Image (cartoon, rainbow, N blue to C red):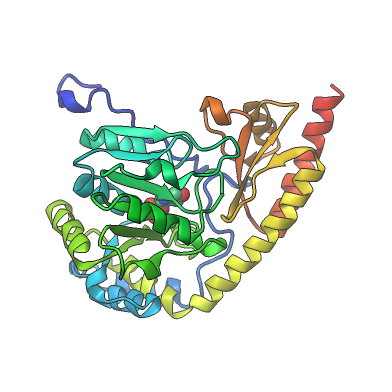
Length: 354
Ligand SMILES: *Cc1c(COP(=O)(O)O)cnc(C)c1O
């Protein structure tokens, strides 16, 4: 740290992203990317847009927002397009965190970082013993409520009717529902946007639409909420999405069937993998995401993580006491999951017969 850093950022503990190794030969199951390539035409659209890189990108993101509006049955004014959904989260914490924020104790690790960044007081509400969310604990908060649904890293989903109870129980605060994983089996609360002025839904192209490297996300809400986000977006970086990503996103939406089929494939691979891990003695939470959260009673999570790494398989372990036994395992191709399961079979049998 230099002696010049603003005192307010000195205690800030930055978010630590999962590792992105640059050498080949890893089975990479640590950051919930899609194992499948972008759809036909997406890379071409980005390359064509690259020919116009001398010009700024469209600050209104009009064509992309219109395509999203059509896909999701809302209007352009209901959509804020962002450089990865992390950016929408950042704007939302800035915009709506004025009276503090609450979220579960086990959830996306970026939420507390945004609170620290913007000086937002926050409270973490413990998940129940089975890692589920009790909606009633979020009633009467009257600040920003943030729920990842399905939750990460557990993968567990809350029915929309339960989210609706939180919306009604917190009428004077925004309820942000982070739907990064909803395409893999969760239920979206996008249809509730019309009904609730305090609902903000955040989505990403990184997981279900194979565009993690392009950085594209969006937020959906009533016009007044979106105008607030836009105010912050125009005060931060009006050209937040580059021209290539805008074009890639539109091309992706034109091939949406391809992505939804991939999501169904990933969900099927997930269930088969869950059975295989359970057979090896793992406790695996029920997941509606593109990942599993699994613990083995006989081995600490960190030991499993290191043993997999020795076998060139990367999964994610979180240094948080309550989940220290677990690893979050991204669902890859069936072939990648066979490699994972075989590696874990070795690791477990070595652990039991050292
Ligand atoms: C991956 C993830 C994000 C971030 O997605 P980007 O669009 O790549 O920034 C947001 N929320 C949750 C819960 C995630 O898992």
